[in-house]
Length: 407
Ligand SMILES: C[S@@+](CC[C@H](N)C(=O)[O-])C[C@H]1O[C@@H](n2cnc3c(N)ncnc32)[C@H](O)[C@@H]1O
Image (cartoon, rainbow, N blue to C red; front, side, top):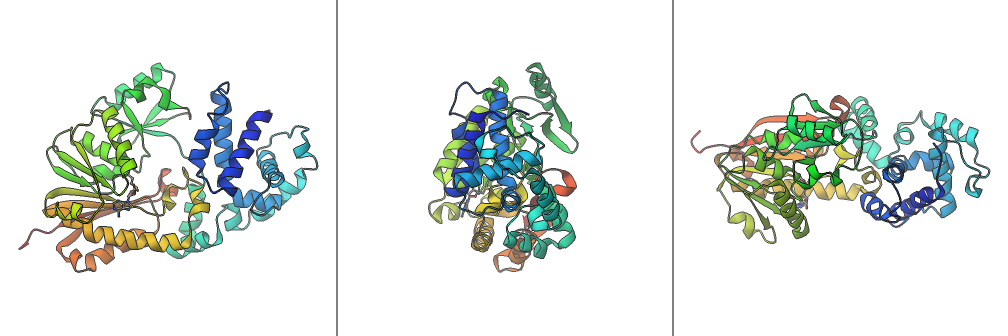
């Protein structure tokens, strides 16, 4: 691979914004890709993938490069040089790469690879937390899997098309994909690419959604005609899936505490041809109270640490803080307590997270069931998805039923 100066400059600028200015990697990449209209798909791919890779391996590379944050531009170039050497790329004779100690870099990599927190490039506290919660063996395997680049998975929007037909339409545009066993609407792309510019996407024939995430709406066991609350709907990844499973019949109330996310949800619903969704901003406890005892199904796709989705969101390793973990657990427990009240007797809810930490998952459900409000509920089944076992995102989901009085 030959390095192009203007692309590498874009990468260095991006790393500065992410590492030193605390900006989000996805937003930075989105902005950078608009910098030069002449860049083609390969150039854009280089910028995006190199930035994500260096973000993922920040701790390991910084340690090898012997630099500490905040990283000045010389330090960022040294980190970049480590990335290039580890990828076997020949360094051009630019001034930034003068005196790059190629052999020392390789030697340090071998030495640091013996220690998990360096090898897997994670902060001490997160490494300790992962081991405490999952045990040494599972955590070692799981964090390794969470450091792999995620594949691109689509969910065929069955309101408009079958996955078989979508597969053929994509193939006509040169995009090859495969079905995934036990994931009825999923297609896995054989190669990464910008699928958002395809006509198929613009016409709402699919959404990008990881295979594990696609199991959540199915787990809720919805039927056409039901009244369903999606209580933490965000921009609606799972709301749209619910609408497909309900064949556009019945009612979905999609809620969140952020209006901008619900606005995005409305745009996506329009593109998807999903007509049974209404949005409600949770700006006071009254919004939930009004729906008390009224819903057949409730989805709680709870806010969480996102430790299960580090593959697609590697900068969360650096942005997450121990205090946030404690805060979010309190929010999860409050949400379970309050939002479960929307269910009718006999109704069912799913509590789900994209975390693999038991304290956000099964322990939250156990505590809820033991609480005063939880007494009216019983756990029907749960699924714990670890990335190293499935090759998809780490997820948790529990199906809980509100007991009918007298039973
Ligand atoms: C895991 S994300 C949801 C993802 C979304 N369901 C999807 O499939 O695309 C969790 C969502 O919960 C929202 N949230 C945070 N605190 C909340 C609260 N107290 N009540 C309702 N939603 C909340 C966040 O804004 C975020 O959109």
